[in-house]
Image (cartoon, rainbow, N blue to C red; front, side, top):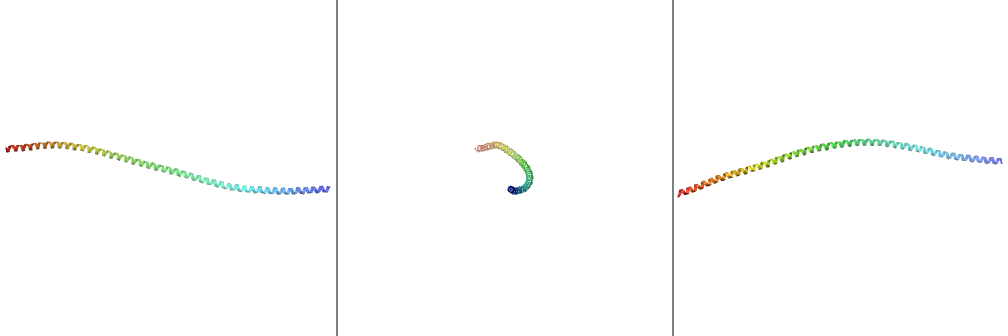
Length: 157
């Protein structure tokens, strides 16, 4: 009996050792998987940190380009604004000059029309006076000629 008991105890111990070895193997496998997962996670973390750093650098570059573009855009807008103001000013000056020239020519035309009317009226008045004088003179000459004709007729009788 004792030997059976010892044997059973030995079998139990051997089974326990086998179980412990299996458990140890399982734990070692588990430990290796955990360590592998940690290594993979570390590699992924490093890769992610590198990507993040590259993204930060790219973002800074893009922000600098955006600032430069914005400043250049503002400068271009200011140049265009100044050019537009200058062109508008020149156009307004030309328009004012054209307006003044037009007013001058219209004034000259109106004055010439008045001069022509005054001259026409003066000529009409002079013609009227001249015709009146000529008619009177012609009338007197006609009367004298008639008197002369009548006088010569009476002398002949």
